[in-house]
Length: 320
Image (tube, rainbow, N blue to C red; front, side, top):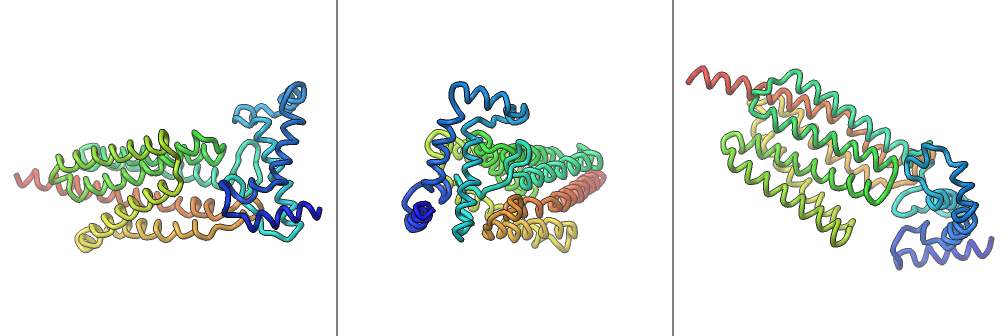
């Protein structure tokens, strides 16, 4: 026990010297994983493991090595708590209690609920707004892009792999860029369609370059975060400026202002990084839960705005 405590203290001093998280750099964790793999993940032992593994776990891609990492994570967490240390992260994540094959239950369920909210509002928008509305197709495209992003968020929080992580990040970037494009069409594109088309092509090119760099050159978490913060600020400033300039003429823009400001405010929850409550609920999951009603507000804004534009265009046609 004294040796393990010494290892923990040594790791605390050297926390910034190696890649990874505190937990997965812990020698106790690494030794545990190595011994577990030698004992269970080859030959007859591996066959025995596979015979006992539930079918839903194998279908979800959980391997013997993954199971060793999961079990050894809790061994290490127990040691940290026993010695009075703060709960460490492992491979960039807090330790979560797995439910069936779901790696992060609260975030996965919250992502699913966000997706369901998007689907419900998409169906409502399609039912209440005629396709002849000037913004109809752009809003529908945004709804499908959002729905796709929440699908991959659900998959990623269910099972974290290299592929699901990248799809979650890339689709989240696509939503922000499409929101900027949506704002461009609403503020500029209705009067100058060619400008909106050119700007949309530029945004698509930026997304492709972003994905190519992270996929083919280096998956840089710091760069990805800075890129998304930058485009998020552009999205915030553009929508906010347009809404404030038109709030007297278009009262429904208040919903858009509320959504944009709340999204920025709620994103601060990510800074309140703490070990998950009951090993399930962390700040990221709370952020996902808090965004569910915002889908309803934003699609209500899009619905009201699209109906306003339809009425306005029909009135202009009558005058002509």
